[in-house]
Length: 220
Image 1 (cartoon, rainbow, N blue to C red):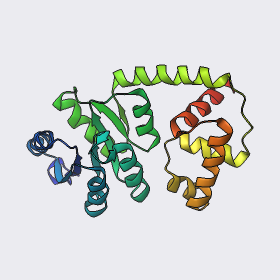
Image 2: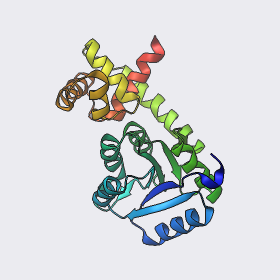
Image 3: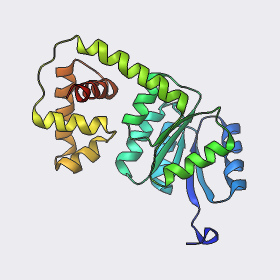
């Protein structure tokens, strides 16, 4: 399809700073190839607008006034697996980065990126590929190594084969709904498996469970 006839990439902007949203809208409008279909400044609004507008890409901040962009991402991806989520934020905490990935996000960029890098990143995730800021990558890998070393010293009850399958999908960034579909289980059953996994591994977050999985894979 010729570039002139290609459908524009539909974007939903999610950030609690109105001035930033105005700047992003202007950037994508002037760049062409994009259509900013809506904006949201809260987690609740992000979920509602994603449901209503069904954008191709949600450009999301991590911190929102009424909650976490990570939770919004997980909810959006569970309801619409074709919707891509790209985080653009100044909040680069290592655990937060891991959480976005495990929530099903397709990318994570710091707000220091150039306009050209951001435009290219949106195109990349819209095409089904992922993007991760190089500086963030180094920090996350360092965090994973540190957490893995700490967790390896603790004894854990063995996971059942089904629990291992669920954990592998968690580490792959799948949502509970996606895991349920892949394993032909109910969402409630997947939730029970995750509760058992967390209890056996003595963790409280998906990120920590994924670190354990990654560590075990390197040993095999």
